[in-house]
Length: 116
Image 1: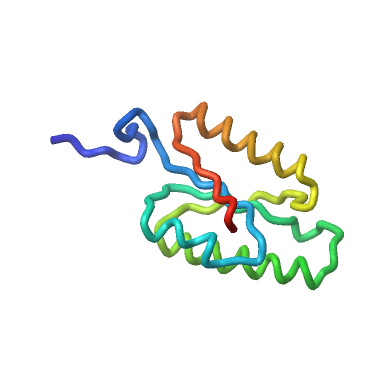
Image 2 (image 1 turned 120 degrees about the vertical axis):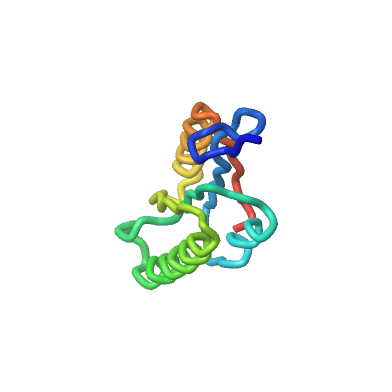
């Protein structure tokens, strides 16, 4: 019986399970999928701190980024923050499609959480 290590492909040839989470002002919807489903890594997409938006809104957004990041890391999921102009749908689509393409080319399974 052989064991799969982090660098070995999972059954079906996949290496990692990756989630892309465009994040609004939400915690539960961003974290809930991981109570039943395994993930190795997650990308959290949100406005950058220097977005030129109302500073109160940016602070509120990054509160949610911090809370979701903490909870995912507590579940053993590596988290990467990706700054995105969330109010520019073309920018969001460009970033999401780039992440999907890059991860799929690496042989990873990719899920996009649109409910958060």
